[in-house]
Amino acid sequence: MSTSTSLKESWGTTRTVVRIEHPERYSGLERIMLAAQGDLQRLLSAFFADIVDVEVLYATNTPRTAPASPSSPIIQTRKVQLKCRSAIVCTATSTVTLTSPECERLILDAKFAIGQTFRQMKQVPEFTLKHVEVEESAEGEEELRRTYTLMSPGIECEILEVFPSREMFVDGEEWLKKQARLRHWSPESDTSSGSE
Image 1: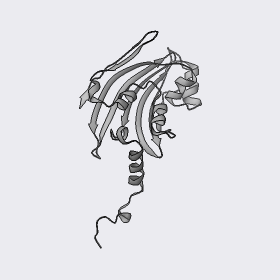
Image 2: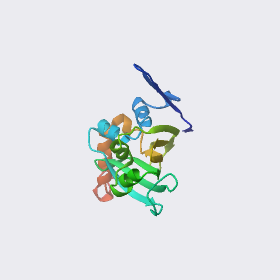
Image 3: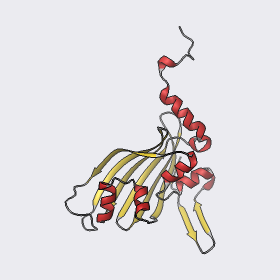
Image 4: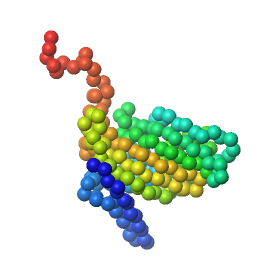
């Protein structure tokens, strides 16, 4: 199921409202994750009540011939996995455009993840949810995917995130335990077939 889903957010002195188009398609927890604005790792850590690490699979930059600036941006394409207890809870593929030396330093030299970069700069990025879809994975799981942008002075990111299973948002701890069992399973250790 592929849908263009919009998110509208407004706030006043005493009221905040976040509206996701077709909210009935997503659980409450899924809506929270879909609305995350550079703080997904933090929210996943709160949900699982455990550490969530970022593992960089690849990061490729355009040449650094001059300090990053609007007239000479540095572009990085990257793919990372967010992991909790070695289980992949999200895979994120990003294009990051850097237009300030400070953002260049944080991302390329200090190796900050995207969310931590915004926190380090003490900035709340401008967030636009562009697309949400549910697809069946090769393993038969319902994957939840979102594409969005984050923008702040000196940095612009377009990110595709894939959550491997919607079941993860329902069963949390049990889902993590199941992933651990699947990682440690081998045909030699499977005694369920009964053949000997």
